Length: 213
View 1 (cartoon, helix red, strand yellow):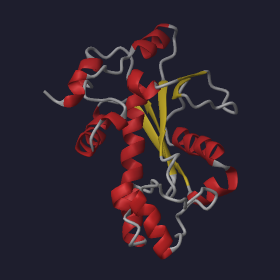
View 2 (cartoon, helix red, strand yellow):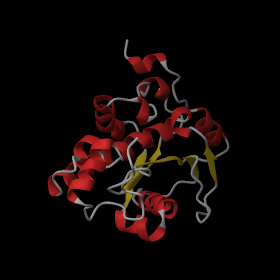
View 3 (cartoon, one colour):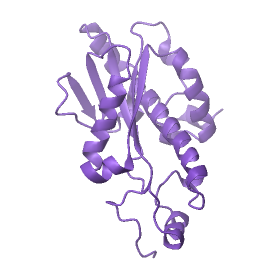
View 4 (tube, one colour):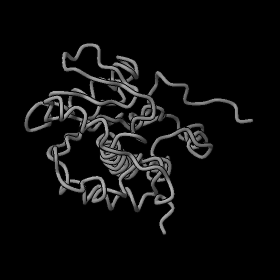
């Protein structure tokens, strides 16, 4: 039995409640890369089809991307388009993060993911992130990616699309091992910054170096 099968699965409880209230394009929203030292922040938006029989069971392996290994995430990133009604992905660059700050840049990535949808949603479910400038009705909840199926699906798209971009950046900026740590502040990454200096895709508004314990 896979390890994920022993965990609590995200459900469609919130989506079903909103579908019953007349919201038909309920979008789950999540992001990846907010805490990294390099690379963009990525947001994804997923709209699941309402009233599909056994959808929870068919998507049983979908969960918070942090609870999945790389092979599970990649496999589901290929399968998910066959289950979702619509999805979009958006990025905010390291330069935008430095200029705007990480929270406004994350909201910008979400706006771009929403713009990538074929039609706008009518309700947003978010993993703790609030979008005060977006007029759509919305609900932000803690650990939403572990509880809400559409948010969990969005977490997989955000993580896998960002990881793929970090692998591309690894080839462009060798020596930092972006493919390995995806831009996060591991000991090896910080050692590479000390040796090579920062790259154009590092976030210079972040503390790139600190003394190791």
